[in-house]
Image (cartoon, rainbow over all chains, first blue to last red; front, side):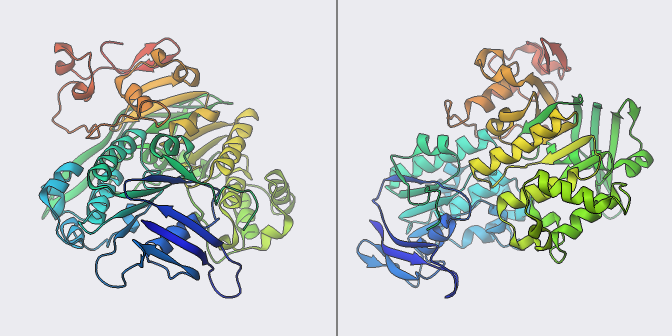
Length: 204
Length: 307
């Protein structure tokens, strides 16, 4: 289980807490939604949960133990803009090597063509590049995926396609998913439960 | 106001040594907008939506070649006329705050936009103040730098910059991406207001639901060509949509049946016939022979042999 225990974060000591005393749990195989207005700290929370940012107070636990500090992180984060999440000077093949072992069946599931491996990120479309990022995030160590507006830049057909593959893989491997999105219809369609922490109209 | 017929955009690039190759990215693109109308342009990424906006502003790179007819207020839009009109009669609301100068105070930038759109030096301060109050921006916001603005405020500043002059045609490129629903509704409301004062608004977006909140008409692009022009009300009953691609797009929404396709539709230069053969269930021998023309159908238009 991925859980946060009275988690808090602030950017700098002079600033107020962006979120405070936040307890959440995501069990394996569960798909949890989260929405709320811009600038409330949803993305920051995702970065803290994935270990990109250190917790200000409280802790992030996975299976009762803190997140590992070295080696592949079992919590992987997917961003809204895949083109900003990859090294623009690396070819797609090298980007995929960042994950432990890029397996052929996974590439097949995601529809990653071998011709792409020789291209640079800017030579792929947004939907194609997001699938590359998904392949990179889905190494065998991954237990939880945090999808931060993963498909909000994509058209409806590509969005539906990417979610279908993601749900399929998540079901097979028993991954836990956190879906952050402004699209309430999308969350209603995908998720079994909703975290309403960021939805209040007052600032925390 | 604006009438585009059979627009095509090609890029030349060097393949090897001095050998040149031409890639056609937009072909057979048709679009028209009347004053007082919000025309939404939807389609997959790479369908040529932003290229269209760039072509209308004459800011395509030098290796691009534009063909076809663009009529603005009944007269052809030549490069000379274009450079005189852009910023004055044709204005762009850019996608993000990065379009502003990060080192210049917001008020100065809106004032500069006003000057460039032909407002006299004497009238500029009052015009800028009016634009600020119209978009509910407090006076002190004028002294802020772009990074101090919140998402919704940034949208209002960008809208103010584009509309401070007397532009009759407003191009809005992805005005709601990355905004929460409340802020997005507000930004779209501003576009509707502009149309209601008699301006023509071209709303470029990939999000159908967003577009339908304010648009009168919807033009659907796919693979660099116009596949359907539909009224916003045609999306209410599923049966009114004319083209298989539009139907697939509508069906893929999370609120509908949420079915996606593996591959985006692409038109390669050697395709003969309709580019949608593979995803269409009405496909027959005619579809393989020729690419269908854009036909009138009810109050809209469609590019399909069987519609």
